[in-house]
Amino acid sequence: MNCRRCDQKAVIHMRQHKLALCAEHYLEWIPEQTERFIKKYGMFTRDEKILVAVSGGKDSLSLWDILARLGYQADGLYLGLGIDAGISYSHESQRLTEKFASEHNLKLHVVDIEKEYGKSIPVLADISYRGHGRPCAVCGLAKRHEMNRIARDFGYDVLATGHNLDDEAAVLFGNTLKWVGDYILRQGPVLPGTDGLARKVKPLCRFYEREMTAYAIARGIEYIYEECPFADGSQSIFHKEALNQLETARPGTKLIFYLSFLEAKNNGNLFVEKSAGQSQLHPCLKCGQPTSAPGLCSFCRMIEKAENPT
Ligand code: Q46
Ligand code: ZN
Ligand code: ZN
Image 1 (cartoon, rainbow, N blue to C red):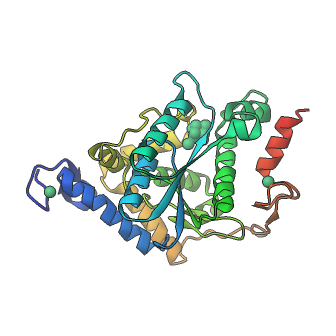
Image 2 (image 1 turned 120 degrees about the horizontal axis):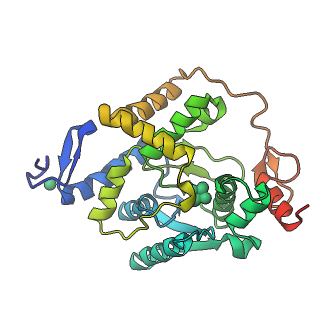
């Protein structure tokens, strides 16, 4: 199959778009499309300061690369989680992130959870769950808290993450199976900022995972191939596999699922309603971030509990 733009041999064929492109034109097409999504969903402007959450994986490094190529003011934030089960995952992902930042002359903030709070994510999870359960809930809580903290302390307008279409479709699928209306309503390419919380955006949310892999490889980006060891066997992987089966049988299913959801949400046709009393927020007594819990936010409560285990 040949490239639609130049007739060279294509390196990727996107059946859902009926589009095949060579490497050179694919590397143009991805930033063009990203720019289109940034404008379409009103994510940010060139005057705003963007903080990109980078994990050392293909999606977040590619996102950072694309935003830099498009001329946005995008700095990176790497969170050291202290996850070293077997493959030294955190160490290698930090090394690749720092390498990318220095090669592209980009500013990177590095926050090490253990240095900052005295305990790594697996240790905090062990304390919270008394040695049972996977650390993902604790990890997600800590990541959200630290991203918000750095965005606020360094004056970033917007927080960008590298979630791709496979991620978003899997989250939507999981939330739909459980019909959790609040979460479904909150999902989308942009989560507006509130007092004390930066706007959150997902510029890659319409690209398939395989498209991001192809971009990272064509750009020569060195990224960590391994998933976090705790991702194995998770609900989201199970939902991704189910969606992959649908996608194989009907190419374009994931994109249609996600875009139809956004359209229905936009038109007020979702048939889920916000539960009452959801948005009563006040500042956490310790860190000042908005929370609906009385007194301390859930992150600060977790840290207090880890410092004074009962
Ligand atoms: S939540 Fe869970 Fe991820 Fe944290 S512990 Fe690993 S798999 S990194 S996206
Ligand atoms: Zn071409
Ligand atoms: Zn707090």
